[in-house]
Amino acid sequence: MVQFREYRRRVLRPLGKILVRIGATPNTMTTLSLGLGLVSVYFLFQHYLLFLLFGILHLLADALDGVIASVQGESTFGKYFDRATDNMVALLIVIKIGYFLHDYYAYLVAGLYLLAQLVYVASRSTAPILFGRSVSLIALFLYFPAWLAVTSYLPIMVYLFMGVISVYSLARQLQWFLMRIKS
Image (cartoon, rainbow, N blue to C red; front, side, top):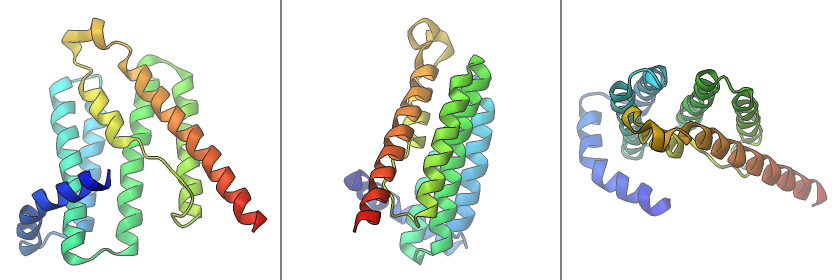
C-alpha cells in the first residue's frame, strides 16, 4: 500500500504542481472529491456509466488532494477532513447497498463501520483501523448491469467485506485499548 501511494504521488506530482499554481488547495480537492463521491453513490445501481465516471473522478480527486498536500504541506484539519470525506463515501455506499437490496444487515454493517471510524477519530488516529472505500468502489465498478448473472452477488460481497473489516477493526481497537489500560 505504501509503495502504491509513493508511485501515485510520483506519477501525479506534475499535475499536482500545476493545480497548486492555479490556486488549488488540498481542502478544495477534498471538497471536490466529496462532491464527486456523493454523485457517484447517487448513480450507483441507477446509471452504471455515470457511477463509473464519477467514481473514477472521485478517486482521482482524492489522490490529487494528497499530492497537493505533499507539495504545499499537510494540515491537521486537512488530514481529518480527507479521512472524513473518504469514510462518508464508504458509509453511503453501504447504506445505498442496503437500500437497493432491501437488506437490513447492510445497515448494521454501516453502523459498525461508523463506530470503528469514530473510535479511530476519538483515539486521535492512533487506534488500529482498516479502510474499505477504495476496494468497495473498485469492486462495484465490476457490477456491470449486462453481466448481472455473473456479478449479482457483488453488492452483498462488498457490504460483507465492509462488515468484516469493521468487526476486525473494532476487535483490534478493543485489544489496543486494553493494552493501553494494562501499561
